[in-house]
Length: 405
Image 1 (cartoon, one colour):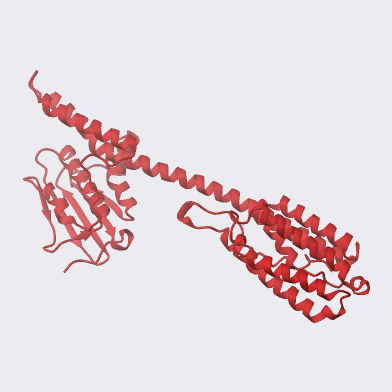
Image 2 (image 1 turned 90 degrees about the horizontal axis):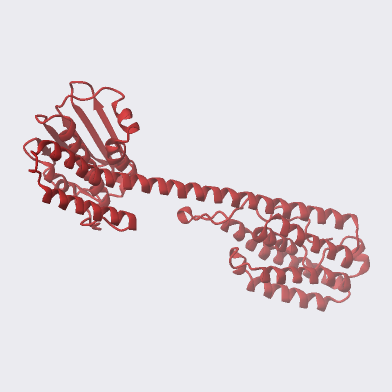
């Protein structure tokens, strides 16, 4: 009786390669299953031989082989923990031991027992070798290893009997099926990895768009306004040059992947009130709780930047006489900031038209920031009724600390 007859349960659906995204691997459960199977198969082989070793012609030789098999299985358990450690050298050694045990079975056992379908010395342990080849190289290598074991069974243990052929077929089918599923899983995970990379690149482009909108485009708008309003030769060229220089350095930092000049990323929680206070002036009123409103530094900075984009929209589009009110609400589950103005408002569909025209103030500088934080940004407006922007950041989504007393 050959070794492969009951290998279908060796790797119960655990397939695939390591997934880079998130650090999770769906291949590791497969290798753990193979490693566990090899140990269980070794115990089964030892029990079967202990139960019948007196019936062998040369039982001492069988014990010597099983001792070597035990040492190798224990020594290679760590190697079978993943494809990086399970090298071709390890698999070749594993295959050599399996074939040796099968051939030895025909030499140390009673021919009458072999004729009646007696198991080989390694029994189903050899199936672990086929599974190792399937995990390392796919269905083709599993088929090759299964063929070698099958030939060893036919030539060294009883010939092409019905039991041998039946078990060899089962071994080949199980090994090839598992190897094929592994290849499909690895291809799927490669596609997923590429999709995640594209998504990351898209999010980075959106972040750059927000920074450029909040800096470069606003400076250009300032240049346009001052150039239109100032009399000939009266523009403050020095101030405009300074602002242009700051934006040039900011662009260089963005292109090199470094932090923006003057922008720090403190690790300690920040009080949102302190970040929103500079927006208050004769046209903008800021109302906040009397106690600190702590948020993680990144969340507080992004939320404050979104508020700044909303306030800038009021100053640019609501008219010179429009006023705005900023209200901060510190709730146990979330922090909500509302920005309301008494300007002319806008008609439905206006935001979509602005986004299609390349004006990304709302879609990127406001909604994009809140989406990155796991929050929401809602805009309400109608002609003649002003605009209200509601920004909500869940504390659980950004890992914010509990409210300070």
